[in-house]
Image (cartoon, one colour):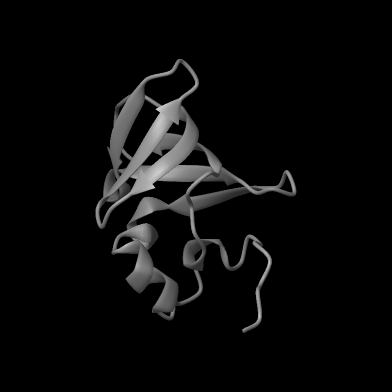
Length: 95
């Protein structure tokens, strides 16, 4: 099995847990910054920098993920909707 490194192009098909992210709402609302600690079909759980845990609906936010290389990638949360294990298998159109 070939292990692929995390790049901006393949980010939606990788595990998001442990990545630092900034969440910006698609409409009016609060922005959040912190580390992704959990994921379900429609939600991401984030440990904010102030120590609070928030649940964010994927389809209502855009996320700026910071890759281990330090590179930042903007991803529309609607692309991330789906169970994590199914999203890893799904073929994505160019986002």
